[in-house]
Amino acid sequence: MSVAATRLPARILPWWPAILLGAMVLVAIFAPLLAPMDPDRQNLLARLKVPGFESRGATNWLGTDELGRDILSRLIHGARVSISVAVLSVLLSGVVGITVGMLAGYLRGWTETVLMRLVDIFLSIPAILLAIITVAVLGPGFFNVILVLALTRWPRYARVAYGQTLSVARQPFVTLARSMGCSVPRALLRHILPNIIGPILVVATLEFGLMVLFEAGLSFLGLGVQPPTASWGAMLSTGRNYVATAWWIATFPGLALFMLVLSANLIGDRLSDIIGKGR
Amino acid sequence: MSLLEVTDLAVAAGSLQLVDGVTLDVRPGEVVALVGESGSGKSLTALSVIGLLADSLRITRGSIRFDGVPVHGAGGQDMADLRGNGLAMIFQEPVSSLNPLMPIGAQVAESLIVHGRASAADAAQQAVRMLGRVGIPDPERRAHQLPAELSGGMCQRVMIAAALISRPRLLIADEPTTALDVTIQAQILDLIRDLAEEEGTAVLMITHDMGIVAEMADRVCVMYGGRVVEQGDVHDIFRQPRHPYTAMLLRTIPRLDHPPKQELFAIPGNVPSPRNWPQGCRFKTRCDRATAQCDATPALSEGAHRVACFHPLSEGMT
Image (cartoon, rainbow over all chains, first blue to last red; front, side, top):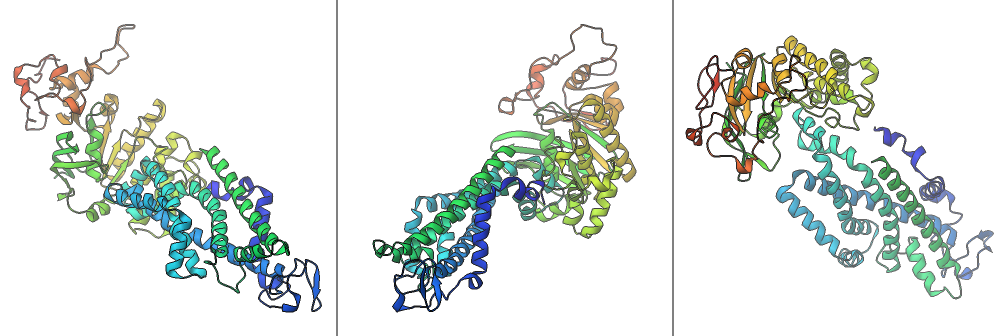
């Protein structure tokens, strides 16, 4: 691997957003072990209880929701949905976008025209509108949400990959690689991709935060992951109805979202500073 | 028989003709210098041979044969087989011609791996040996370094190693020493010549430096305005240039016995851009021998010493 990549963690990552993000990822992975209660277990006798309420010999540290479910446990399980949707949609849209952008930037000619005009078209459609329409057609659900997010977000990566490929493909080392017999796919993957991945990583980090918000937005509108699966967006949505009487239902998922997105964005900003300086 | 045979090659960008009828040949094991000013079409000729012209450029006429087999138009697959196998190329700027994020050992091994001629481990070993042969000290350790950790001269050695590891039959060297300082230049040229001699590799050396030509070449091919104007044995060309342009080129070489403070010779005028190449002979606007006859295009004569001029210099005139 490159020098830049091996020195990445020590030099680049601001420590507290990285720790926060890392902790949230760990919580998501080990959710079943960490959650004090079953997130879907209802207890209608303990509806809308304040944080610290005790029922059945256990404490609801962050209170209960309108069906008496433990907010803390739902929050912990909700991290799984938020983070896995964000990671998978970033990966999917990244792979599609980078492929399109690199092909357009390397092959030029009519391929470039067709692909990049397609990118322009996608960028001109309001993302949330496209997402809503697509979910309406495909139906809600975990994988459909990922698909929809990737569908609306790949043009960002295509744009960046295209611009970077345009400049890198003109470098003499690409011609040298080709003169040694490298095929076009090999030249793209082995010689061009490592040289353009930096700025794309910045985009991906910032997109990660955006994907968390998008997923929450779709769930808030009822188009995301379906009940009873816990999702921060859906929790916010129900919490809205009780915000005057039971503030904790909406507050805690809101805080969790805020911290996750903030830490992702801070890491992205720092990455972009470092990569910008490296030029 | 010729290893490389280029006949009447023409390259155009859209309607703009950049190379216009280049004929040259390289025999096995010999060093041919392709000489000319910037914009004379020498690099484009080389890139046409290896099939890596930019997308906006097209070969519009002529043929290129490698080992008797036509390569231009023979289909992309054949060309890709030749590249890094029978045919290799080194470029002008050693530092930017290497992938900045790939260890140099891997870059030297690349052509072996691409053509499946060695396993990864074997290719890596061969690369280290090749790095040693081109004079990289401590090749074992250096193979893991990135180009940024090497000097320009070292990078050029790496590029030469990468080109020669596949034991090509023809090496195209496109101004391999232009970006290097003079002391390194001589080392690199010696290296190319020695290795080519050891392996029996023919070299097509592209340069604008007549000093390099004198030192390296067996034969010379002089280009002007996208055409070959003179071609022949290096001794004949230097002793008795026949094209007025070649003669002037030779007069531009500064000499140690040149009287001090006297102005150096420069060819009058500028190289015309391809947009306004004159009709007929392209050198006539700068030539002191031009007549009305030069409005027609002179053909390259036949024989060992070939010239494309209506009024060539004859013996004893220089």
